[in-house]
Length: 336
Ligand code: TRP
Image 1 (cartoon, rainbow, N blue to C red):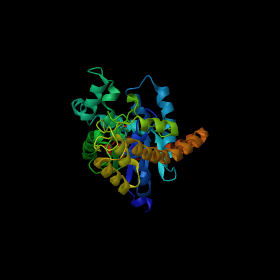
Image 2: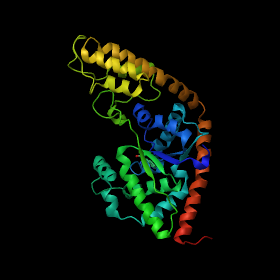
Image 3: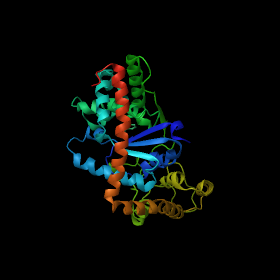
Image 4: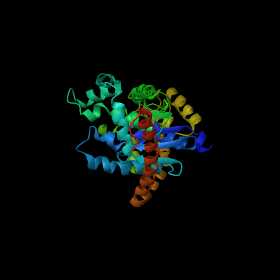
């Protein structure tokens, strides 16, 4: 496909920590595929991360490099996907300022994502203003690239809705369609449960497998995995639903037919947890070992990684400045 006919896709990540298998299943794996069919941009949303991390700039800054290493290690190819840093794209902030006049505080407070995030963080009424309006800044991100496809998790769907409301409002003010509406592309794999089986994989819960996990870490995590607590003897029938080992085999084992056979065998009885865990361990080592090696190689060349981010960001400065120009002209502002 030529560039002109490829749909524009923008994904964004708040760089809050090293990525893990949950991110791999939820987004990274599909981004590697999407870069061949779409014009793909990945935004490292460091400014958005600061909306609840204002005193943690150093951490956010370091995480940019960690996350970039993760992208490159899993196969995001900078000749196909453009990676950029949000805080280095000034047009996004100008667009945000104009868009702020087309949304009310009440509407922002009703945004379900923001509402639940405020609750989770225990902000009550002491919400950083930057946090409350981050949906507007996200609308600026999306529209600045004229993205029509935005891959997000279920929890971010209200952001897409709010973006499209702003798009319609701004276009109406301008009098013609400068900004395109966008569509959420939902990841179909759902969120990966942590290896403890308790909740989704998350760093704060300590139940993650990172993308550069050692073979030993993988073994440890698999051995600790929650299975069927009633499957006491090998010959007992076992339950597959809610059994983390099978959840992970479903997510990562390339041989679906064999996984189905294993499930049937486990349900009948006669298949021990140890055997299934050995298989999963081998599957995860095969997946992670090459990612880990690529990541370690890249980590030795931080200047090359910075160059990729610099090149990508410079390209995106032009794209986003172009959209800003169109919006300002459309609104009828001075052009000096
Ligand atoms: N809000 C997203 C998150 O929770 C990050 C993000 C920022 C984003 N800008 C974006 C996602 C633009 C998609 C498009 O991580």
